[in-house]
Image (cartoon, rainbow, N blue to C red; front, top):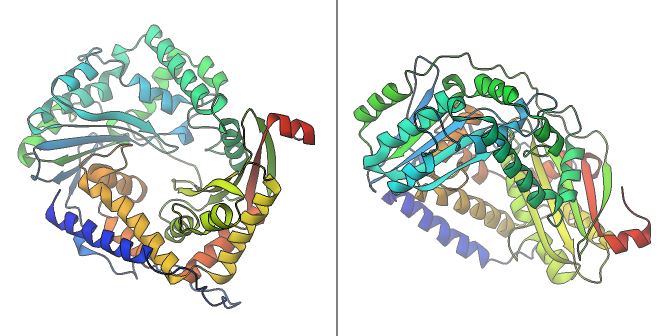
Length: 483
């Protein structure tokens, strides 16, 4: 890991530790009735020069975007490819295609056959995987530097010639794998059906994010080989992809390899994206879901503004104030003091058309979901009216920054959005600026207590949320609940 990043993480860790020892009990003064000023924007916040990830960005004539970050501290190279397609791009009746392709891309291509994984394993590759989100699908691996050319050949062959290695049998096998993954994630997983109910209510039918990323059983079953071919030809083109390379490589040689393997791929126009940002709910919604679980659960879900908008940093900090440690608001109120919940969570999933904020609590044995819901409301109302303490605010920021900046230690991290290659890709995908990290950190550091109060009132109010209550089947039946 480069020395400047190592020093930065050490300083953050020290700051985090000192914040954790601070007393969080003294409440902030009540907020003024007037609307407080908005969160500091990246243009007004102080940027951190020590967070710059040096990179070069350019584009091939066929439309492929290339991002290069050189770091010679370790003899490793990370390759990270993002295709700018996700479930938001799927046609009606074809949900799950983006995630299905994440599987199919490991099934072979014209010149590689089915040797993709075996070849990577033979050269000591690590962290070989792919992931799908609502807006993108990515593929990544890390190899010793002397095997970079091999990886570029492998990635280019499946970008250009994956369909030549696919047949009906392989499609059917991977379709069944995805269906089984859906069963394990949702149908047969504790609180899985409740999660589906929450997502389907937040994003009703007809919105780009409707349904789970993994797709529905019906649509997966209906997928034909021609459908797959059409989807690949539309979205798996150089013009709709970004290649990031981070690590120990020779720039001149690497550019020559990129031209050799990717520059010869056919140029196809990048598909147009016509979706507008998804609006939040206009009225509150409530669902009760019966499941074969031991404990009830309460989940609040909200549609919040898209990734990296003006309020995204304040919402990130708000979630970290609410949950993520034993000193956080929800944990203290519901687990430690109230003994109402066995665990709590708060998260923000930021995406291109909308983000999802979720606040959840698993009801403790012998307690009622109604009690937990009232306590969750009280915590949110208290945070909106009085704001976080200085200690809470500082601790939340440090937790976010330590988590994200810890990725600087890696060239390629798990999930494809961590590590330096993943961070460059993420910022480029959402903002067109791979070097946005210092601006993002400055925006997090600039969040004030009044910003937290404001985003709760504007985006996390009761009239804009979905409440999903999971009830154990016996309990729900006795109370007459259910959908």
